[in-house]
Length: 397
Image 1 (cartoon, one colour):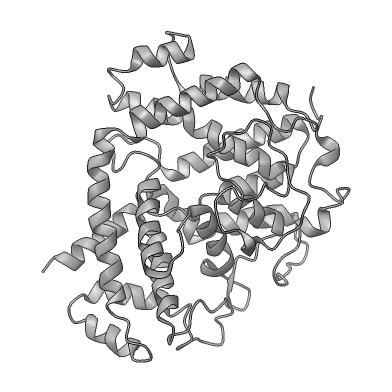
Image 2 (image 1 turned 180 degrees about the vertical axis):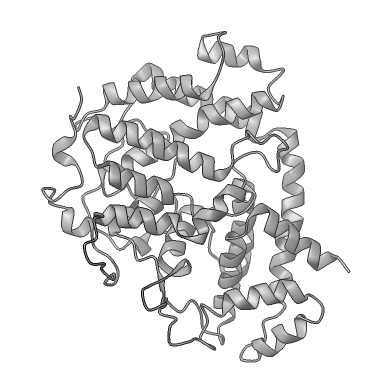
């Protein structure tokens, strides 16, 4: 039945509405602005540099020669499309799902989940905190990404609570069937681990499920194109109970239809038992035969060396209050590497900030832990190619 969630959509009639549209600070208003609050969030996200860089970040397969292999930005577009279809059918706010879906992976590091694991290892070693892309995504929209206002002041994205919540709550690695939103309005900085809280809105729950629906079939499609599953196709046919053409559109259509037909306010967003078991089988198959494939493991060792070297070279420039002098000295050996890093730092530290720099100050120069965190933020924003280029400039002569 269509529109069965309509009475719970994110709109003015929802008792949570005022919390949903809260922003951390006031946002400048345009005369005769035709956009809703969530439409404004969507356009702020697509105008951000973090969004633009997604086209050069790994989804699963690193540096494919085939132009048709999925990148991070294509995955984001799939999530937006799937969540729109589900939200429209259920009667939810498609403007909100679009904004959340478009921004949900802004915090991803270069080299996909392998890069994320490597940065987390460094973070835990250096200052005792895990790195996870959902948390990093919230930090990026709250602290890192900058847009200029009418007066050319640099300000953070300042998104609504509902979109920010959707970003940090989107973790697609879910194993429960029947997702419902939480009632509590919490400080999102209370998140310390992935999937710690349910999302605040039904729309964010939709994106959470759409994330899984979007990557399961697409990763299979890519693996088949690259020949990784040549010896495992019979196993896959058994799981899918079909020897017909296996492609993402067929898998997405089945999962979306099943979810829409079986979900209810009482049960939450859920699949039928048969389809839920199918999802678990596909996920298990993908982890065993795709994500743990030898071809991927070889590249992981390269990513480990590359990201660690970039981190420790940048960290070697820390000298307390004399760090600017140390960076200037490091430019003699690594001119382009430290020129780029210093330019990025100038937006976030308590030195040399112009009157037009209205964004949050990211760290105090006197605090070494702040400096280490800033390096992690900087690296996490790199595209695959920029990270490789930075590494080559470090080891080259």
